[in-house]
Image (cartoon, rainbow, N blue to C red; front, side, top):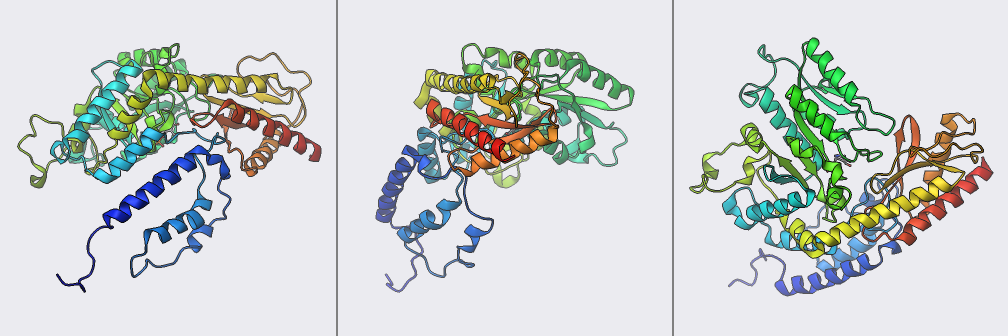
Length: 503
Ligand SMILES: Cc1ncc(COP(=O)(O)O)c(C=O)c1O
């Protein structure tokens, strides 16, 4: 053996063992008290990149030196999604079992494109998605597949819908087809942007997506949907699909899925249900109703990475017509042919991507570690905390709620002056009695949001509802306890009071 030969192997196994233990300790400490960091990163744009060398090192560096830079240079630029004061967007959790699964997934490094490239990855995906499907109360006709995000799940669902109504697109495309009418897809004006992007990606054209107005509780209006479909047919469009949402991104409203499913059946339209955030709540006793009607859907997306304590990323698409997804995308070149193809499921066939991560392991470990009861209890507690917070908002004369709270998100705003003549709560927030222009109330809340996010104790995001700037408190993190929600409320009241004095 030549001692001068360059080292062309992996990290020394003993160094790996030592560093793995160190990182396990670091993660355990981090998760024990994530609030030692400000929840929202305090760095300026460019600060992290400029602290790093412009070139990769010529020679390898010891891992402890690299890890020291991780802590010193990179950690300040981390926004802490694990922080119990993280209430922005949809708060999520990288739970212990999920993190451990990710460690194992990285170590195994299997690529589950074919059954044979890791039978366990393929079969565990089927098992874990079967368990989840049962917990959600969906029938066995739905075949499940895991993608990275709901955006990608929805693209595949809409691709299957397009395949159903516009066959041969994979061979002939859409351009210049005299045999195809322009297609129309419907969703509410509260639908997540992932549907818009899916439509754009599939070449249907953004104009093909018709946004249906919503009722005062932000649910798709069935009458408006029916009229839109009739009007489009009369005008020569080909309606192909409706996307209903269970838990919209802004206010978490639930579209009337059962009635939409009836309409889709009558009109022969594909029904895709976007339950990315709230779908998991269907496993909580008393919340089964949220997916009523979804059993008639053609496809449904649920994101365990949002509110099922599964580290990002993992989105589950359930589809009755996975054959159409395969018809749209399956393609097997010689170098991927296998003799077992007739008897196994090759996951590369159910989608665009060839390479696939072994994501099922983390879902399986999360489902087993918490169990159905543990998951239900945790989801139920988040909803209790949201109702508690909503109650504080409702009881305060100088705040008002802007939407119902079906799950774990509260949309509200502060009033620059206390409302003197506040109407009784209608579950939808009261109108500001103070005769103040909406723009001023919006500006006040924008300043309030900035002020409380600067504290480093909480991170809240915003949306716009009925044209009004709304603060949005989302609970979904396993570290968040009642004390953290109470602290958020104290901070909001305190900073709103301070702003009132200065404006
Ligand atoms: C209702 C809904 N659907 C889809 C998405 C997109 O999710 P993803 O980031 O997994 O693509 C979101 C994101 O918040 C959402 O709220």
